[in-house]
Length: 332
Image (cartoon, rainbow, N blue to C red; front, side):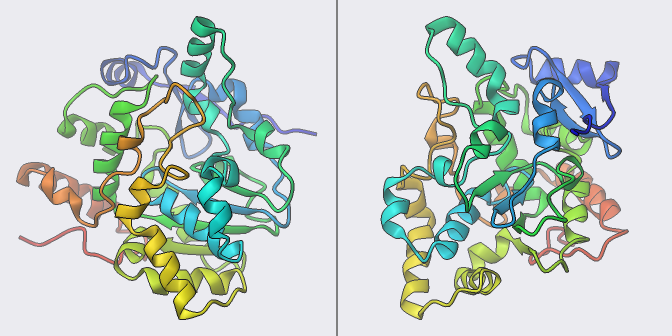
């Protein structure tokens, strides 16, 4: 018997006013779901049950992350390592079909519905129904926190969680949300940081998302990695992922994958640099794979904003032993 989705509340008046200002294109607004108050689009009320009640298969592989945390490069890395470095298939088959985004329709479905109503064209939807039809072994991407995927952790499937420091995440999330049709953030970067720190963007709270995964990192079926490690020492991460999947590769094979995942090659790869299956492009590829940098935030944060953000980071790291591979709070 399926469980009901967790209890939810609508944004309060102040939050709703901010959402209407910054995300006017999201006509139906947002809710907060579960004990930890995860921000979700209104559409979650219609489609969340299928996500919440999903039954992972023992031979599944799931990549879980907060958005803009290096997810796409992790998907390609994991898929190739787990599939015996099958570059031929990776070059001819879209990552969306090899590693579908489990709940994408919750995020973009309203806009896709609008397009269908205007053109009559049906758009292939990425949702649990799509993933349930896939043959095993499945590879699935999600940004959902573990609380909203209650059957995942205790399944026998393999889970790779990738995390990224909060300063680079907020910069990348800011740019990305400006160009997603149906969301289209309006406002300054400073305003976006304030909105993010109030846990009002989809999948927030950011810190709870990371801490919940960090607390589970000792599980034998979960591998916790950092995007910063992928950028600074990719060969070591490839070997770590290979060990997790009980695979062994030569140095030549590892270097071939390093070259394949290099940001310049990655941006040019049409099999990975496409944000959706929507032929009308919910978001243009040029905005999907950005710079792939560590500490790119330095180009965007003013001293005043960085000081405020640092206070927020320090406050949220008081109760955890989670540490990032880089120091994201730099003493002046």
